[in-house]
Image 1: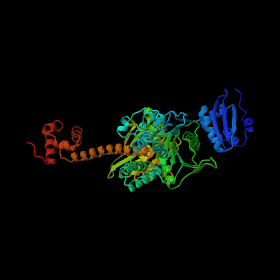
Image 2 (image 1 turned 120 degrees about the vertical axis):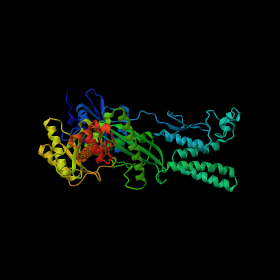
Image 3 (image 1 turned 180 degrees about the vertical axis):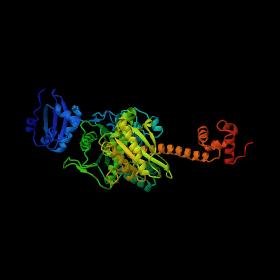
Length: 602
């Protein structure tokens, strides 16, 4: 296969804004991109010093021809890139996952226009408003219109001629008050069209104008003592104001603004779009994008924004974004708000996109549980600055009672889930008295000394339940075994959930809601539960054996027999003579009853 002479191709590419296209050996279009400087952008793909991810390397290896289109501005390149990707759908470009036909609200071009929703946009002169990314929002608006305005729902051809000739009669909708009967000229077309004008105002987010007009009609009707008309419009005003209170998110000073935000992980990105008119959200949608070449959030956001503005026919002069983007155009202002109402709008958009991301990932993970495991482990590796995925994690915890019965427990998580068959207890052998540091040192040393002797795989992450002292003790044992550089060890302090690293005096604080912290807390709590259970059993057995051994005539062997049979001193106290005689002799039974305050047996 002939190699590609990219240097010769680069020499023909100018330093101008435009769109570039990559073709493979079969002359198939495999990638489309935009640039404010075509030569600089294309040459970056062939820069030998640049570290590229796997798919990008594959893409570059397949390039055999480059074509380009020069445009006047960056914005032109941005829009052209979007339209070309949708048309050609190259293999290595991210695809906007949007296989739905979104609904529109149509105001039909006809006498006495009907208002309804449709998924089919036809060039018939009718007015289409939308599309609506949220079907629920669309139906809410239609319900408002139906409740506020008496519009016809029939499809009769209500031409002036047909009405004058009396071709139609009113139907049940007229009888129940949902229609004013234009079919029999009970409502004039001028009055009907005034309602349609108000509906257009509402659909364009200008509900404030409609409310203002309704208030004037109420006042005029009241002044003229037309209380019936005033009452009708007062009901209408109540419905409109109730809807406005739900739909208005900021002051009406913010008009014709687009808002976009993004949430992403290693494989997917989700972008939310809000269109604001007169302080109300009139259109909203969130889309999902599957990454192809480890695209940055900025690249994905700009591509999605172009798609949204095309779909919603947006001509907004201002776009609110979560971070600065490189697009420059005199007709569009990109704003990164720091405070105020636009900041609140951006936060609302971010809340929506995070919720959408969570729901989508939950759906995928239900279908494929391994996806959740991979995501959590990848997030843990990123949050804890690990060099490898923590597929095998071990956590240590110590327990003692006033310096007595010291034990240490270890729990094991594999693929972010408990591996209970690998849990272990340690009876501390070398420590006298309450010395938590020495106990931790012994437990860690014994655990990994055995693993090394048995040639077992070491964990990628070791968690020590405790602060700097316990962490230092654990690290001392790891150094003795020569594995301190092979594993990562961290300590978690109970009070503030602080994470400590060896040699770092400042703790790491994770977001309280992060899944990484939740896994660490689960490990710590499981180690505590497992350790305290063993510790209590050992402590109880030690306490009971001492108590029974103090009874004259009941020695160590008899005490152990009683405990094995009855499990606790309470049951021994409550046992009958016949039950006790099955374990010990009559003389010992009498001694027990006397010791526990019972009557001597005859």
